[in-house]
Amino acid sequence: MPRKFFAFILLIVAGFFLGGASAASRHSQQASDPVFAKLDSIVKTLSDITGLEQKHAVPYGRMNHKQLRQFLAKRLKATLRPEELHADELSLKLFGLVPQDFDLKKSTVDLLTEQAAAFYDYQEKRLFMLDTSSVTEEEVTLAHELSHALVDQHFNMEKFMEEGPTSDDENLAHSAVVEGQATWLMMAYQLKKSGLSPEPTAEMLKQATDSTEAATADYPVLAKSPVYIQRSLLFPYSEGTRFFDAVYRKLGKASFARVFTDPPSDSGQIIHPDRYFAHEKATKPALPEWKPKVKSKNLADGTVGEFDHYMLLFQFIGKDEADLRSPHLKGGQYRIFEVGPGKAPLLEYVSEWDSAEQAESFFSDYQTILRRKWKNCQATPSADDEFSGRGDNGYFIVKRNDALVTSIEGIQSEEEWTQLRHAQPAPVSATVHVGAF
Image (cartoon, rainbow, N blue to C red; front, top):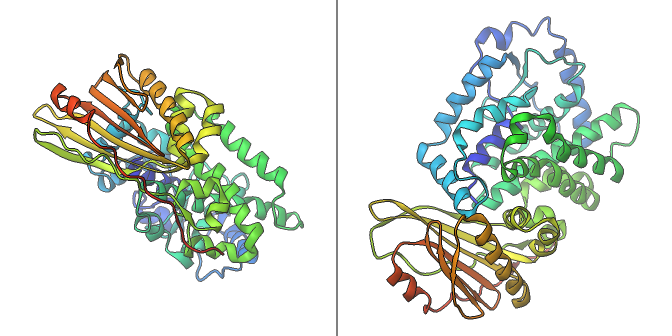
């Protein structure tokens, strides 16, 4: 699923950029602000836990909410082109993951400022606290953000987050590494400061991840956002923390570096750490080989991973089916065209499953998803391995071939739709295994 927007949000939430503050706010408070008495102590404790040496002091500054909102708007404009935001928003709408009237850009700044307390910016290499935050009240938050700063001194987090990922789902996996490790270290910091072993217990991890998932109600803007937006923002913290703990239990201190030097490649590896240890990567099954006869523009393409399929099933069928079905996904891809002078959107999609039986079950699920995401879904008589008809965006055709499920949605020509119903399905790909730890 498209993640330029989410990559931007997570880069901001994981860190902060001081470009909107004046030089005075960056430096003049350092002599009197009590936060400076805490910074070195917190980083020293984090360094002891991780074995990562602090190479230099972390620059620091403050900002008020007005400055924060101004900067976020400026950074959003500079980072994401309008066509990228449009493609992200359209992709989410075509899959039915957000309402058709959802405005992705409009909600961005409010989402980012709602939970602001302290931030670390990978571009400016600087820690920032809002001027309403107290160092005493926010010490645990500072431990989280200074974890980012310490790791950044060793592994270049801007490159890791922006240049490293080669797919949408890998981007989500990298976000989970960054936030999961920092959340784990935040708990470890609390334990070490209390004189205890800095290894969070299973109960602590459960409480932390449960509280993260339950915190949505405390933030009105987030609570009113579509559930896919909510879960996309929470996934790196909840699932990322569980993932990092699994890596730490296996590798010990080496895990603090290993997750950056040999990072997970997809959300499936985050959800199932055993796949990460085995280097079992998601497949990239072939999309339907078809293009509309009229002039069309390739607007977007990317991966659809386990998290995305979980959310599709969760939203349209229910948690039980999502829990049961999504772990059997091997990989998925999508592509979006704008077709004809009216720029009608067309979605091509394929998913591969670990057996023909699982693909058949998802094939049935996807029929339910189509019926529920559209206001109108008129199916035509079809073979057992085909579901076709007309939906809100035009004609559609869904096929199952062995372990593959393919779909083309938004066909404008009845003639082309009829031809596609008789086309040969795409071949099945294979999962790649590349060694193990």
